[in-house]
Length: 67
Image 1: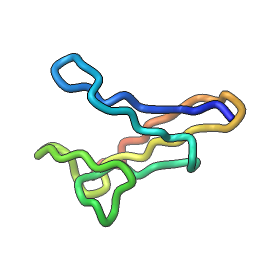
Image 2: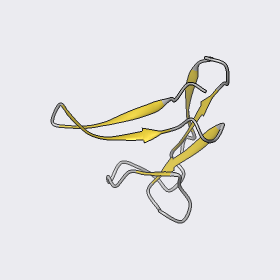
Image 3: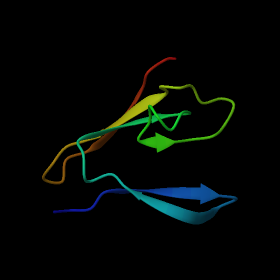
Image 4: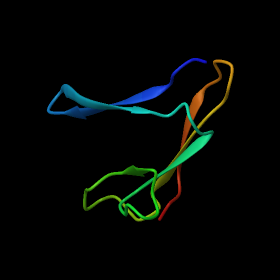
């Protein structure tokens, strides 16, 4: 299985990697109890976006939830 991952950058340096190959989608948001990937920034809402990927080398998609 091909591992898909997000690189977390801070000031241009990679500080972490998040494996997104275990589930077909991940909820990105502010609160730990709701989100798979938590971002702590004033511009991020509770349910901010969904990251979805397709198996077998398919693309990765980001959907803004508009909250």
